Length: 138
Image (cartoon, rainbow, N blue to C red; front, top):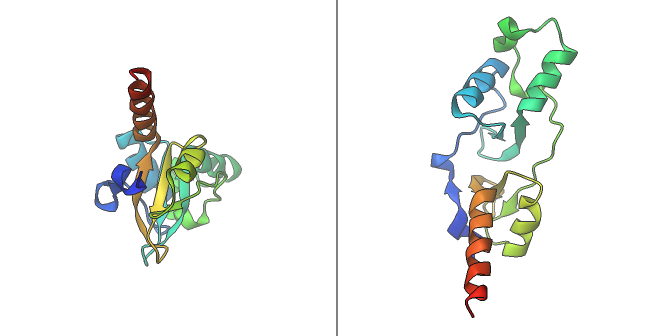
């Protein structure tokens, strides 16, 4: 099966630039209730994923920032503690499933390393469940 079938296109994905601020990230993540959001640079390249934990650790280790100054810190200055690995659009389903076991979503890149969207773990689980159900009927 082609993994493009599961793709949530970039236009439908919340993502940040490394130049967004911690405050922007915190507010938008809270509004959408996301715990992790992809980072995409000015050239459209995937450069990582910022998580709630990354933001909290930055605040903990930089008490001078506090929430009132979070608008002064860009996401590029927040260390990322989890590596959310991407897949290329032409990779096999097995590659996708392997990554999705440890990630809520899998960023998807085109042949030029440009971020084109994500695949959410729930769609993969739903696909696997339906496949399992169809095999049970045989």
